[in-house]
Amino acid sequence: MENNSYYNAKDLKKFGNIAEWDKSLADKFFAWYGEVFEEGALTAREKSIIALAVSHAVQCPYCIDAYATDCLQKGVTNEQMMEALHVTAAIRGGASMVHGVQMMNKVNKLSM
Amino acid sequence: MAETKSLLAKNSIWSNPEAQLEHLESGIFDHELPKFMEKLNEAGWNKLTPSRLEIFQVNIGKMCNQVCQHCHVDAGPDRKEIMTQETMQLILNAIPASGAHTLDLTGGAPEMHPHFRWFVEQALLTGVKDVIVRCNLTIILANKKYHDLPEFFAANNIHVVSSLPFYKKDKTDKQRGDGVFEKSIEALKMLNRVGYGMPNTGLKLDLVYNPAGAFLPAAQSALESEFKKSLMEEYGVSFNQLFTITNIPISRFLDYLIASDNYEDYMDLLVSSFNASAISGVMCRNTLSVGWDGQLFDCDFNQMLELPLSTKGKHIADFSVEDWNKREIVVSQHCYGCTAGAGSSCQGATV
Image (cartoon, rainbow over all chains, first blue to last red; front, side, top):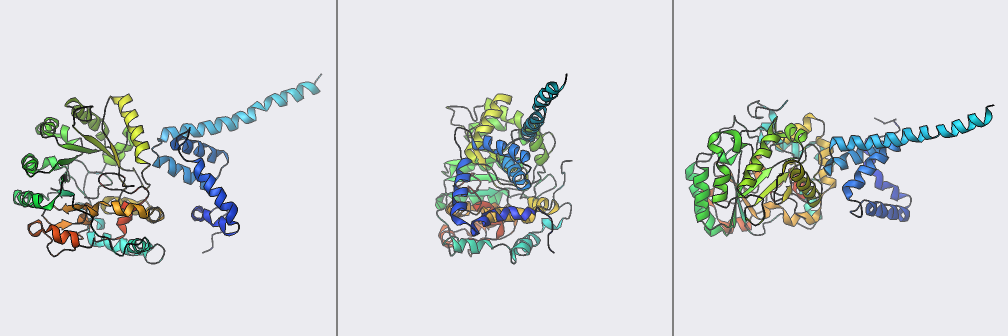
């Protein structure tokens, strides 16, 4: 049966198929992507936690599936994962609230 | 709620090796995913053959004080299969001419066997360099008669390899039963006190990590650092090495995969993580697996699936290292577990 939803969990496995329409750029992208997640000044585990937090910020279901799994594999605890999400939420919430200063500036300028 | 009965006691279909094998040979492997043998062929192996016999891995019985969710042996207090002393003697007789340097004792909880200590002491006389006991830790505290196991291990310089699925209580207890984590920590402290896992004692204490669910283990070295830091900081516990082991899709883990609707995705994960460079290090190439009744197998997993060795002699009484060297290893789709990612064996990652 045809799947008419915008997101299909099985599509994550087909990520590599983007190379079919532009191999050269896809090869560069995947090589760079792989290198980004290697051990460096940050550990691969730390990078996976950042990726999980960012996945929720950009609300990408593929990324959430991928990095929830990756975090589990890398031994990240449930508490650590949830704390990372609160960081996401705090920044998202904070980003709205800090604009309150702009709102206040405008209102104050217009008001007698 | 922790499990208290084996699949066998519950009359589960997945206690039947034939049903398991049928499941592994069909379904998603009919068309969608390649069979293990095809992947071997693609990687340039027209059959899987042995390297050199190094390890006798002996399962001395299925009785255990725990009922772990992922157990491929389906071990537990209700399992009564146990090796006779005569079979143990046949193993002792076979070791010297085999060239094996390691005896790896497993179960169940091998320490519950009434002849366990005798077997260990006799094995040391055969000239093997390393005697491993796969200790579930909680057995040390399970009964007064086991309290002196750390001293017994130390006196015989036994290499202790213990399962601890995680360095946190919640995931450990979920997989191995309520209270298992705290008892395991207490047992680890007892082992540390007699010198296990401590510097300059020569007494080796290794831990085994296996994922608490349908995912692969992380890089062994990174996880080892996490375990070492956490166990030392929170509990003052030391150990030598961490072995990461991939859960093999048979028995209770297969039951879990099917019941949780994870089976197809997990098999897909194992197949897509197939690593050709892990083939040469798989343990069936250097290990002889002996069952509680003396039957011979390529590994402990084939033993539980009742896939016998392909040699003419299939019992320890008829063991011939020459035949073992010439045999073809028996494979099915569960073998993907040992070749996924960084590879997996009873000695941890293989790549």
